[in-house]
Amino acid sequence: MVKMYSNLPWKEFLFIVFCLITLIQLSYYGIFFRLLAFFKPADKEQSQQHPVSVIICARDEAAKLVTHLTGVLVQTYPSTHEVIVVNHNSQDDTRYLLDEFKKTFKGLHIVNLEQEAIGIPGKKYPLSIGIKEAKYEIVLLTDADCVPASEFWIHKMQDGYRKGIEVVLGYSPLHKRPGLLNKIIRFDCFHTGLQYLSYALAGLPYMGVGRNLSYKKEVFFRNKGFSSINHVPGGDDDLFVNRVANKKNTAVMIDPQTFTLSEPKKTFGDWMRQKTRHYSTARFYKPLHKFLLGGYALTHFLFYPLFFCSLFYDWRAALIVFGIRLITQGFIYYKSMQQLDEEDLFPWWWLLDIWMFFYYFIFASALWKKPRTTWN
Image: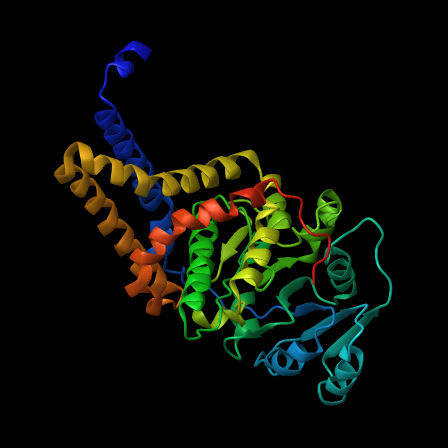
């Protein structure tokens, strides 16, 4: 076998590898990503309105709470619900601001923490306290810098709880702003959503985002909270979901009324630091998830260099293979962007896809780099 391949001209060998890489890429689009592109929620047999506890952890977030918290507090939801804000040792005016909100919104429950949890980095400690304080079985999580896209966010998210469902994954896009950086960051958000929502629909949920995530208290306490990941600075959302979610107990909600919106980073450096922190938890995913995600990222990274090399072997054949992948990818992206209300990115998708080669190169080190120990 080795001798046979050693006799192949290098150009022909690289073209064969290019074809194999393209086939693997097409497999991801055909097996996984099409599920989100063509997703249609099942009709509910009956409408339910569960009591819900919304939990927000805040640390020195007064400036964000003053503009975003009202969107959570004025939700239209006829059933019982509460909003818990865990003020984790803030040194700004968060405490006083929350007291002012409390005067107007009686459903606001404030938890003031004035100490750190030794040996538990990140926001897992304040989030655990918030879950323990919650009155109701269903908890709905978001961040202080997020605002619901509609007044029916709570109503629509809790609608995902059918029989046997314990985890509901939502989507959290970023605000649309002018400029190329905004498109790059928002495309990354879309690309991440395309993956974790598609995998969940395929019965392989591997992560959720804390900006829009719901689960039952029972599944939290049954798995001893965050005890298995307390040593990891992040992971209160993705690693927890990676451990407790499965094909039977997980649902996704992609109605635009279930979205929560947050501000994207304003500089490339700030965004890089944020992404590095997020990627640092990927090493703790289950082996199957790491294999599938790694296979997709590797083939995505290799696609364009191999295409360029294949042009020197047979440019017509290379363009045909490239075109098949281009059409397939463009169609899936278009349908998925419609689902996630990101259609304005579609004219740029081909350029942003080329950018992904550099993206993987830049952030590869985050997979082994030691993460920061703070969550804010």
